[in-house]
Length: 93
Image 1 (tube, rainbow, N blue to C red):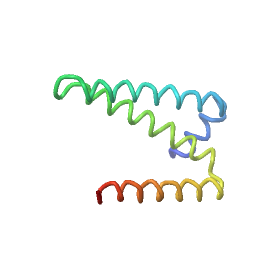
Image 2 (tube, helix red, strand yellow):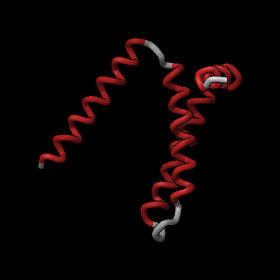
Image 3 (cartoon, one colour):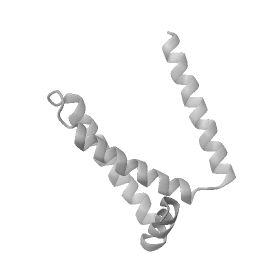
């Protein structure tokens, strides 16, 4: 089964609101793992961080599929470009 089909079936089975809440939960878990990775002893927390990162990426892919609308897609691309330009300017300082 292709991942797009899996995502569609998950959204159908669990509902949009539920999957958005699941995304928020996974983001919170990623934030906790990031803090542990940053302040913990060297080389600890990396596995947990990667696990949570993958969970968030998968949830984001689901929600992107849900919002697969030309207006959203354009806004997403424009916003990403805007943020990258801002980050590039930070490097020039």
